[in-house]
Length: 265
Ligand SMILES: [Zn+2]
Image (cartoon, rainbow, N blue to C red):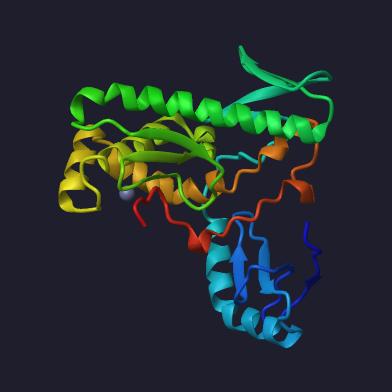
């Protein structure tokens, strides 16, 4: 974990965190869906350059925070649960060899320690995502004249899905925490790319034929996409009564740079 620093900036005080990154080529300012401002800076960036970047980003930070404050949330940052199709499953922890199994509204999570427990949760999320996406794709198999070469679930925070030139579909496992209509929509979006490898009119016509609720789902993805892609699976390990304000449950997804359900980019 990178060291954090907090401070106040310029005429427009925001409490912010600084994360130094060896991979960062330039200073980048992000606003998470909870309003937290983070500066990602190259190792050698000086304090003055960081202050200047924050100052320049001030109006954008203000606009973004105002917009976020008016967006209704799904409330995914709840401790002690995992989410599947927009519904919470309560986590029951047990000590033993790693295993995560959902049954009747609960997830029984067995592991010798927290690190193994988190890995088990992530494995469970990935396989749940694959199973649910495959089911949605199966529903439209007869209506699409192409089969995916491969379907994978990945740990991505910037997009829900993608389709490559060889017809391999990949989805962020975080998609599975979303309500089922959104999972359905994203699965069909990528499936439609098996036929149209772009966002041409033909693509949108096909997607709308497959999912007539497309305009509504796209609006919902714009509204909730940041929260879903910023979802932090380690929340599942916290006791159910942990406070929401806990620093541990802050996610660091940058709404400003999210590409929703895009592909082939
Ligand atoms: Zn697309």
